Length: 95
Image (cartoon, rainbow, N blue to C red; front, side, top):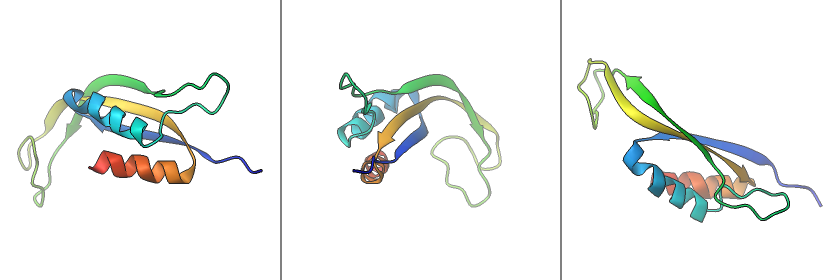
């Protein structure tokens, strides 16, 4: 039997949204370690400051068009086993 492919999912979210986003991807099957021990909800996260400058065609949720914005973000990384689970986890993040 062939083993399923492993993927890393990395995303950035506002600190207030990190727990809800992790709960959504874990519910979709992300963060399950395929080895012994039955580990679930495995992830790495770190806090930082993201920056961006919205272009002329942008409709930014925060900041203003043409102005550099810096905002706190959380980077979350998790293991996903299987392409179907990747699709489910990404769909959960988009909701």
